[in-house]
Amino acid sequence: MLTRLAPSPTGALHLGNARTFLITWLLARQSQGRILLRIEDLDGPRIKSGADQQAIEDLRWLGLDWDEGPTYQSPRAAVYRQAVEHLLASGQAYPCICSRRDVNQAASAPHGQDAGPIYPGTCRGKFASIAEAERVAGHPPAVRFQVPDITVKWMDEFHGPQQCEVARELGDFVILKADGVAAYQLAVVLDDTASGVTHVIRGDDLLNSTPRQILLHRALQLSDKIPRYCHIPLVIGSDGRRLAKRHGDTRLAYYREQGVAPGRLLALLAKWSGIPVGDSVDAQQLIKHFDLQKVPKHPITFFPADDAWLRTKI
Image (tube, rainbow, N blue to C red; front, top):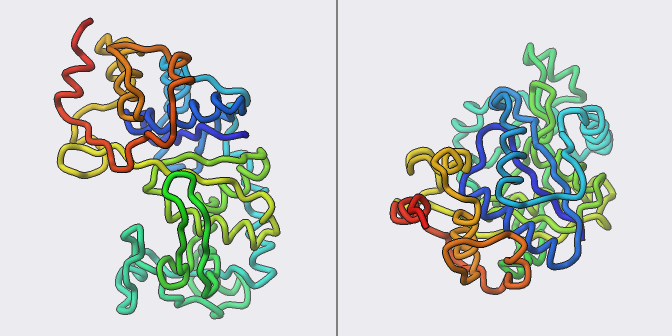
């Protein structure tokens, strides 16, 4: 087993990130598996200076270690571009000059599983090359993967059997942005394959990324490298929405600054993960008690009382 912790330096790690990383770490350590630390630093405009080092410090503070890395995505631009060129040459991708506004305004654009508009295929078969698309638009195009009209089926380690009618539910998706940076879906497929990742554990807000990534594995002749996927319910606020600034400061760095001990915070994360513990615990102590089958099947709600409990001295 080889899995990865993959923080993005677009912001600080919060309690929801930490719970997912703890579950990832526990699954790997239970199986005598290996863990890769990968910094997913492709979202250039949103990257915050020093956020990568902050994430590393936060993970170490919690007692979560890794066996390889940190590696970064940004130096692998040439690898991503080569894959895009292969998909273009094989007719499995095409240049797209549509703006986000164009897609949103398309009369025939329903919304997909992730609440984003489904691309209506406006640029499918429209341009013979990226150069032609750029001449027409006056700016570099994005590149979209051409989704086949099939049903993708897979087994999720947490949610069980899954299937998705990809053309109807998701539509063609971007694999290379107009600024020349690889999109998330393509980058993680190539990075997981290159690193030998066998298990991907992440929040279930990314459940519908799985059929996209399976399609990319197949299109790039990497079907034998498809990892096993495990999607964990998110941590949400008391209003039922995903954890964010509106719920107060839930950054690990904030609790460190408030003098909260890592064992106290780990105890809360452990309870959220189905492990009965006391008021403080060490990460190593949790390994023998963790059971994926006991992780709650519903989203975990972070209440103000949880914040108060964390900051209560013991």
